[in-house]
Image (cartoon, rainbow over all chains, first blue to last red; front, top):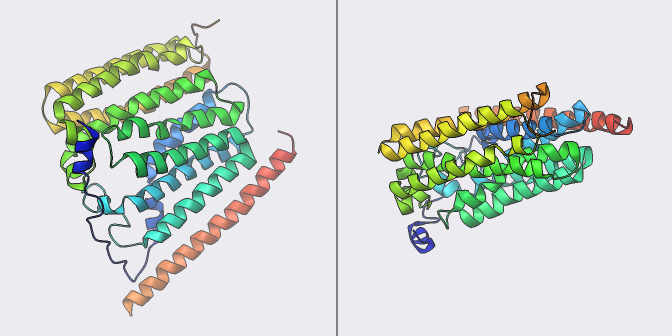
Length: 314
Length: 40
């Protein structure tokens, strides 16, 4: 479907601002702003990039690098919640967040997010290196300005392009150790970049009503189930050779290559099952598997690298 | 009255967490400085 259709669907700002409760926000509300569940996968992939990278890093500096990645990701999430408080209020999945519930003033969330963004990038630069800091700032800015503000309400390709923001963490971890961006870290970026669309579209398939009500032009809303399933299958097919890049580039060995092939084939089968069976259960299963897929890919990559299992490269 | 007490309790909780976060940040900067100056 076209962008025009997407913009027709977008409602934008029709939800009244909730009155902020007199009791004010609690500590837990600020933690919720950081999207802890999303942060955990970001931290894990960033840590994996750090562990896979060649070279050495002091354990304290490594811990600071991971902390900066976590805080920056959380800060971007807080700014995202500030900007999206109107659509969060009409989606069942997000209606319980602090801003739509009126537990916190919007400006508090924005200030919290901006302060932590600046702090985390500066800390990364001063404590680790400025290449990692620049990538961290780029990821943060990309998530806020490109994905949240520019793309999300305008085009069904929102998470395809915007997904790049979530693909940065392993590259940042790699840069924290090496101080540069190599072909190998680009491969890690590409794995998450191609994984993101089927992951989010699986979610959007069973949350279709939510997104339609909020006016967010996710692919299932504007293009329908069939076209979404076809796109999901294409991305899982593209992911298979890309997931093997670490083995082909010598970053990982055959063990990783075999596991990555098996997992990628299961991801393809998962996409086919969603396409064949027109029910939400399969989409939920695929969403769950996609999280497991990324976790296992990076876990096996780390194991392969640290244990030093045989590879293809000399 | 209960609302006022609840508000004070929440504010106190936020103040304590902010204090802990700032103290943690100072300690972190101190440790990072030691590591960086150590040439590691």
